Each structure stands twice: as C-alpha cells, then as structure tokens.
Image 1 (cartoon, helix red, strand yellow):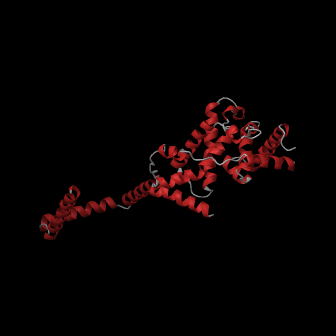
Image 2: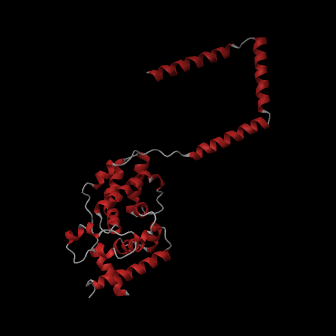
Length: 181
Length: 107
C-alpha cells in the first residue's frame, strides 16, 4: 500500500509538475523487473531486451496521464511491456503465428555468468510465447493469476490452461536434463 | 503433479536475477520526449453546445428585436437630448485604462 502510494506520488509529480526526476526514480525502481521480463520472453537476448524495455518506459512516460491508479503501477507497466513485446513480434513475423517465433539461445550471455548446469532460457525456449509469459510471471515474478490475466488481457481460465501446458512441457524438459532426481 | 510444480518453482526462482542498472536509466531519461499537455476537448464541446443553446433561445424569445429597439431608443434619446456627461466621463476612463494596460504590456 505504501509502495503504491509512493508510486502514485511520483506519477503525480511527473504528470502535474512535469518533474522528470520523479520519472527517473520510477525507472530506477522498475528497470530490473521490466528488463528481466523481456530477457525471459526473448530467451536471453540482452540487446533486444534493453531496446524493448527502453520503448516500454518511453511509452509509459508519454501515456502517464492515462494511469489512474486503479491497478498497481507495476501491473500497468507490465501491461505496456507485454504490448510492446507482442507488437515487436507481430512486426517481425506479420504473416505467421506468434507462437512460431523462435529465439536464438546463443544470445544468452547470462549462461556463462551464472555458471548454471543448464540455461534457464533454453528451458523457456521449449514453451510457446503465451505459455512462457504466464509461466515466468507466475513463478518468477510471483504474480497472481488475476494479475496475469489483467496484464495479458486473457481470461483467467486461459491463463490457467497456459500455465498447465507450460508446466508440463517445462517439467518434462527439466527431468530429461537431470533435474528433479 | 505437485513435484512438477515444486521443480519449476525452484528452478525459476533460483534463476531469478536482479539486473544492475548500468546506465540504463540514464539512457531512458535521455530518450524521453517532451511531454505535450493533452488537450481536453470536453470543456470546449460543452461551451460550444451551451453557446449554441443560448443563441437559439435568444433568437426564439425575440432577443434580437429587443436589442434593436433599445439601440434605436438610446440613439433617439442622444440625438434629441444631447449626450450625457457621465457617458463621456466613462468613455475617457475606459480610454485611460486601455492606454495604461498597453504601457504595462510594453514594459
């Protein structure tokens, strides 16, 4: 509650007083989660993720007047990020199914940095776009199904279906690669 | 089923990373456009509707004829009885006020 109050204060300062410093604070606060969202959706393409995250914040800045505080600022920002991402996909593959878009896992710089047994992005690549969005928002960002439905514009039942299918695919993949034994 | 749930939850939470800013915020702030105040059309539309309504009522209830009659009566009065000194004084005051406003604007 206090967090959303302070977000609302910062938003008001930007909208009413045209205070850019207040927006700077909002970007600093949410940059990590927005960039992580894009890293997960693009399966680790850092450069593209940063470009899309930048687009998201610019769109948020220009349409800040429309933020009325009904949702959390973070949910509102995720919704913009989600739209930016799917606009990008549509612009890349205008004639094919959105779920057909594949990402090059060689972009996954974090793989070496983290020294994990298996790249998280390789696991996420097994999922369709919508499944990946639902799975990462639910498990990594710990958002409720209701919030995910709000962000994606999907019905709660559809979110549950994506979660269920994504969970099954991912669990199989992880087990095949030696996890969960 | 619960095992799958736990496996995925554990795997994704382990791989959840906090991303360092590394100049990202500055890049965003440099790329921000100037905020344009959004024009609110509602008051303009409301004013236009009310003005039109007022004009229609004015015409329907004979406002034009009333104004015309009043003007003719005043003109007639001025021509027959001469112009009142108070009117000349009021006009002079208005003129002085207008000149002083212009001077202030120039300054």
